[in-house]
Image (spheres, rainbow, N blue to C red):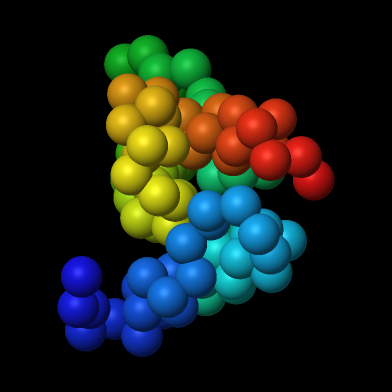
Length: 106
């Protein structure tokens, strides 16, 4: 898959497939950091704020949801097709990373 995004190109050329997973995971973390979405891996999803909650809380929740989706796309794009199919329905990016860690180890 050709990509115009140089960060996505790093993931395209370094898919998590087995050997050298630590190097490939490091590349994924670099991409997530550079795109400013890494934070969702270390921040739990917040409950949906109620109508009487300040707008800032709604904005924070919306930002988390948006960045979580972007993080999931980068993670899924960095793994081979069989793993993509196993994880595509997972809602939270950190859950995908945890599951991949269980499969491949640290």
